[in-house]
Length: 70
Image (cartoon, rainbow, N blue to C red):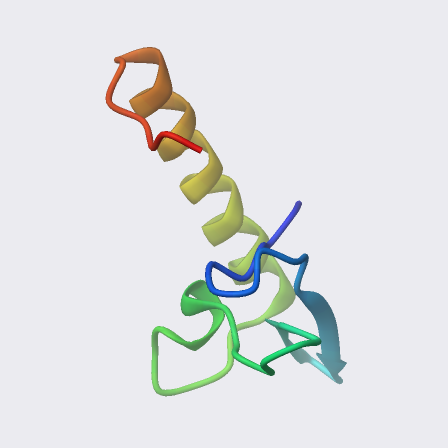
């Protein structure tokens, strides 16, 4: 899965901290909203599921003609 920083427009880097991990931008060091949207770090499986859900959501918006104009 690709996780892109909305501010810097670069791919975030996957940071592995044992059983927990998150995506972090190498430029501004911001972390992914999916990863940090809770008061705890998410497991790798939760991150993958969140990214997949976001990807499907944006795909559905584009199919409906309501997607972002990049």
